[in-house]
Image (cartoon, rainbow, N blue to C red; front, side, top):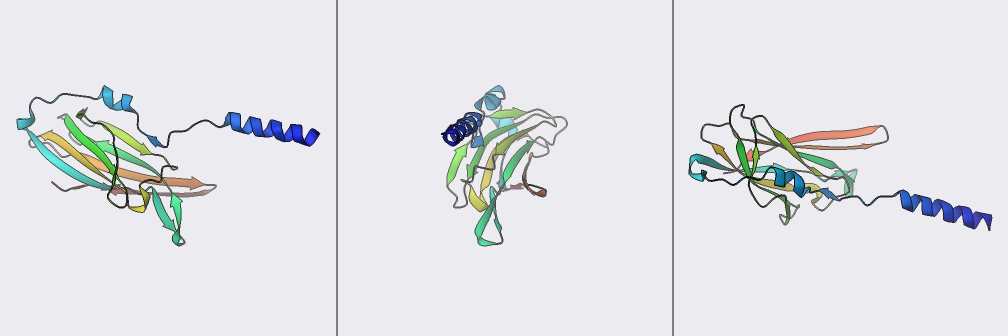
Length: 169
């Protein structure tokens, strides 16, 4: 009977300590604070950029994968001009759209950075996930930089690497 009570206590304690965790960091409040209405679209240059992201990588063989946390960094490289991000859409390995992070333009002030975090447990994207970003910037303004930083730590082992965007339009 003592073992049963002890086992019940341990089980209840463990489950009460476990908190419900988001699978991916989609914080609408972050994007709504940056919302902007663009009236001067004609004077802005349009661009589209591609960024590869890895929510999983192969380990040992093609049959074993290792989950990663991905930080997607959206950077305004101009020290003078504000830029506008129109879209940040996340796709899986097969090119299927998984989610858009906002449905209205957001702004990034000069040299400002904001992030999107893909949690380690969010493996929807797979080994070949990617982002498409659409953006507007003033003419002669440096284009924005989109970077991915993927990492994972288990015990004393750590793994991290980066990717950079490529303009496609």
